[in-house]
Image (cartoon, rainbow, N blue to C red; front, side, top):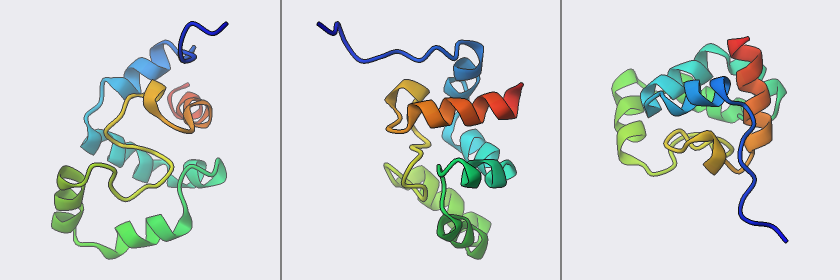
Length: 97
């Protein structure tokens, strides 16, 4: 019998993501877009959308929308709340280690 949802085992790596605000998470994603693309966490169309937007529009969308821009990563949620938690943890491990 399960006692609840599986918790992340990423420890320090998860704490880094969880300690960021959504703008810092967005910057991390954009700085490591090729890695996240390869892991299937973001789509080329999402990167193209971001690159086509003025910076002010990005900030507006990120601050106003509940689940902005990326469909597989929720910028406003901790790692344990992510649908693709395992893939996000693996990507974060590659970024931070």
